[in-house]
Length: 76
Image (spheres, rainbow, N blue to C red):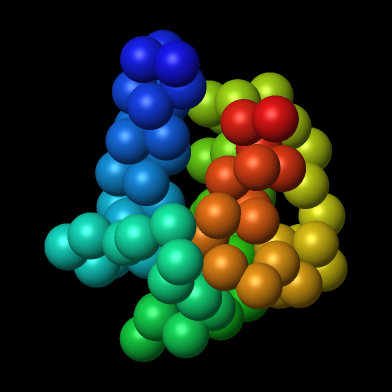
């Protein structure tokens, strides 16, 4: 349980870094952040691949309803 919470905090921190926002919450729609677009989507894809070994398509990244849905896909 504690490891999962740490993994979630780390994921949220990495996601906020890619999106260039101070913080992001699990219920937030990351696609509504000011910098969301094709380049940010690609940067997120690369970050997920590098840090979590998951190959998520750009179409998938643009389809999740919120951070929580993306986090569940990435962290399992």
